[in-house]
Length: 121
Image 1 (cartoon, rainbow, N blue to C red):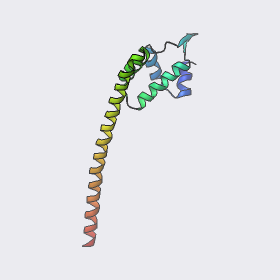
Image 2 (tube, one colour):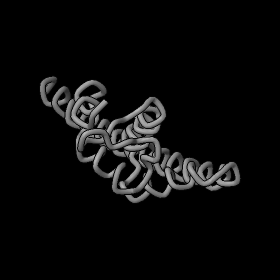
Image 3 (tube, rainbow, N blue to C red):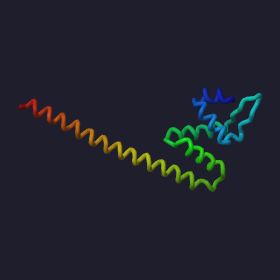
């Protein structure tokens, strides 16, 4: 499957495919008649890259994670640590947003309460 076919079929932006090739992660990708050919292993890796991107990993973090993945089994702890850190950051962001919503809801409540009190008088 060519880069354009992989991009279209799996909805992977070409920029990500080019990054994948530039990182040297495409060991199984073969050049046939001038264009890269992706196999199932490459598509699995690309799926993981897309997942990491969707959960908020920066490009440099994805590159590090993928290189660790290809190293060997000993990188499991490092990859798990990266995932735990991202998870904690997301939880912190969720808690911050929940706090913002609480303040927003209080302000809405205050306005509505004041509006009702003014109508009664």
